[in-house]
Image (tube, rainbow, N blue to C red; front, top):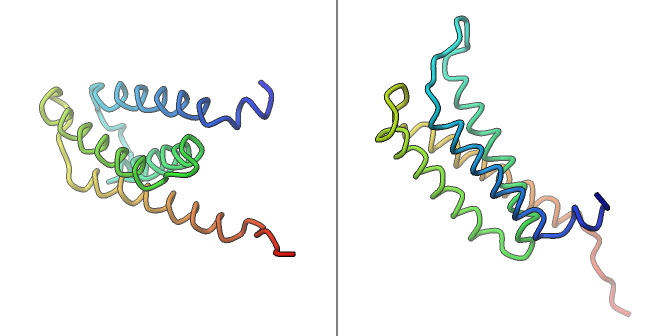
Length: 124
């Protein structure tokens, strides 16, 4: 794949949609913690997943970051509702949604930092 194609917002939109669909499938699968798994390690997974989703959204909609991030937070809420209503081995969790929000906040902070680092056009 050529770099210009990979950089196209439409490509990132398709990748993000694929990632969200995969995330939904994984989130609704039966969950049985592995023996020895660190307590609350799933929160780290939530932060990481939503950091990546937020990063992808920045590339999918480079001029409009707030709306896609709010949409991703709504997606996280719907996933939690789905886990509470559609599964027997998972439950809806405010802590998971908070971890999702933290991942999105980190993605937003990274985008803001990156914008400040970008070269600015000079007058003249």
